[in-house]
Length: 563
Image (tube, rainbow, N blue to C red; front, top):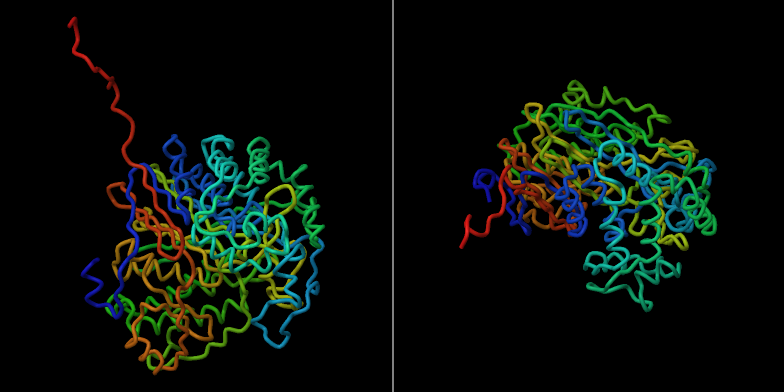
């Protein structure tokens, strides 16, 4: 552990995992088999985008509670020439969706987005038009170098032959069991014999293997044909409104990322409908007025500033966040240095203040993230989800596919920024972040965690840039989060720090963990890459080093001439 940052720290901690290193590539995902799938593509001569899509297809098999083809996501890509693009594959409301299609369960509580009977969270009516399959195939087709069938081979293998359930998957199945039990198809896999599967149980997904084989042959066109018809029919049987026409009409959107300076780096993040870029840059402008390095990691002063900046960001997010095709998001104003200075001047170091966060989206923390890089400068930083654990919590009959439940993230009340509207894209806190130093990649990181994502990813970046932590320390460091109510705080922050924060007026809520598994890559000046994943998920980093033999080298086992 670096003695530098610990000498100033108000909080110290020990890491649980170790990083990986490589020169030809690095894959960091939240499951070892998915990381292995990505590394297999790199070892076969593929690039970072081949590895990323292989990892995502594999995750749809081995982390099925978090990600799937009928979900949505945000991909932040850096190409070999140094250009950045964001591929928006977020789900969107079906054409038949209406602002008044749900009745709010708590009409008097604007933060609660649950509908009466939880019909916006479980079952067919909760499903939005998915974007993942089309986005993944498009990324591979535009930027990859290997055939789709090759990239999907690991996923097909794991679905067909099975894999061993991790304790993480088992715990998720147990938590969702009451809903899973209502659908015989999903219960047969994750509640075998009527009980949640146990760690080590072999999970076989025969129907899904056949679906993957169809996609490997047909590509994204599969969802525009018979497969899409089957999905639409299954959603309709479950009471949903997403049609085959909705899926055929779906298109990804390529967006320019947002960029902003902080200390000696440039931070690059997705634009709206992702709220991450706007509000991370806003908070960095606020925090730039203090020397966080001198204040120390995990000190009461540093945590106070983080909490106040988060509350300010969520106060603005409540009234200025959403699909830019439907909501006017004042990006330039919110990310300007002048606005940061103005908001910073309002912070009182001696006391917590109520910045009135108002309405905020109730995104699910059940997501996944991958960070993949190759030795030629390509980076794929992608956050993907089916929203809640196991999405809408049923399987489309005969396909093995679990639909998303993204309508749970919209406000069931009409007339709000986050209200449902036909064709409206989901607002997200996904924060696939790439940090540049001198125009060259220094770090790439991201994580799952719903509303907690962008605040926690920002903390990971601050751990590196301000506090000088190692990569492994940065992703595993304890976190804090709030959107204006109680300040959630992980146990590693000690009693002395908590006492000071409480004395300043913060209402603290101790949480076993905040957000999910962070996946990060550090780029060293000599071309080496370091990968790290944290203890909050099954995260695994795999580096590709070595290389091919030198030109002209052959194998001569025997001396030349007769013996």
